[in-house]
Structures are given as structure tokens and as C-alpha cells.
Length: 127
Image (cartoon, rainbow, N blue to C red):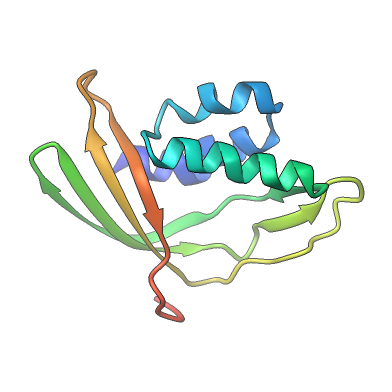
């Protein structure tokens, strides 16, 4: 699903790099509530702690189940080149793993665009 990949590779990194005042607008292209507000708040919390996201999670595998106006994507991300960094120095604080299991719920909005409404990380250690 194109919107799912776009979320991880393009939109989420762009929102993380943008000024706080622009993040909601950037994310709204591919994200719906409640995930939209969750992400805006999470990025604000990083700002408050002098941190920022770096890199991008890259989808390496996924399955999609569509049921009318909702869809479930279960997949695997390569998060090894992403994480949280010190905003002042750029030094990594965390680094993701190469096989990161993920689940995304999507809704087909009235404007015809699929948007991610929830992202969760199943407790599996790898995918």
C-alpha cells in the first residue's frame, strides 16, 4: 500500500525535521486521528527533551487486509538507520533494529485517501 510506505519513508521523517508549527499539516497527508495527535505530541516531547528523530524506517515486508473502508497492514521495518538523537550534537541516543515488527490500522477517508489511524509494535522480538 503506497500510503503506508510513504508514511515511513517520506512523511514521518519530513515531519520530524520540520518546525513544530508545520508538523500537523505535514502528517495529515497520510495520518488520521488518533495517530495524528499522538505523533505531534511525541515529536513535541522529543523537542522538550532536546532530542529529535533521525533517519527513516524502511518497510521490508508487509501484508495488507482490506475490509471496506479500513485496512490492516502487518509488516516489518528496517529501523537500523533510524532512532533518536541529541538535537544539539546529532549524536544518536537510540538506534533501531534491522527487523522491527509493526502493525498499522488505516482508514479510507471520505476524500478517497488511505490514512494511518494507529501504529503499534507487536511484542515479537523480530520479524
